[in-house]
Image (cartoon, rainbow over all chains, first blue to last red; front, side, top):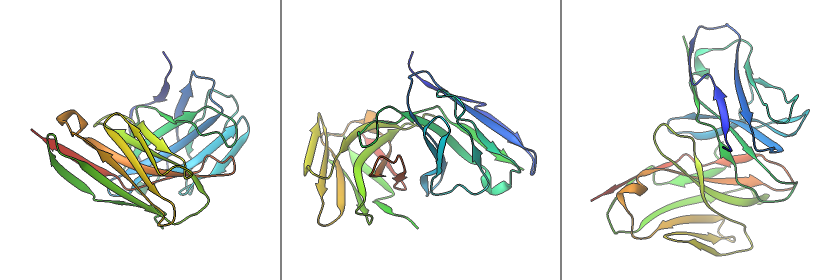
Length: 115
Length: 113
């Protein structure tokens, strides 16, 4: 089944404790992105990747890191989480070459709480 | 700053009625305008999308109207059904091969029987 998977689905942690949220897709997509969803703010793009080893900042990259060492995986790293990073996080992937319109497929989400 | 402004924040429509959600954007570099539908506990899923060289696109009961000069686009849901109750997000993607996407703030639609 074609899908985007995220782990963990739920996480409660404390301020300053490094964490990684994994994202994997089995559709051989080139593009992957991370978003955070907050009430009243919609989805905001954190980082995106156009291919292996190619990443760029979205609208809200502060406090986050990403890496794209393999095409299928795009982990989101919070080196020192803070309470304002409490949010619902979505990973997404999409196929296609530059300039080609393509649909984004979203994962099921990771609900993160930072105490 | 919000580059894609979406309204209304919430909408209640009777079954069989027309639901209309509006979005406005500022950046003329956007080249792709999708609408996503999200049910509680799920990730967003693409509903319908349009490029700025087209003024209208229809897929079943869902229609996007696009006004390039006004930098506005809207989603119309005809014959709204209770199963359409969800949160809807408009979005805009920057052109030039980038995947930088800006979403609106979302509209929670409730269709009542």
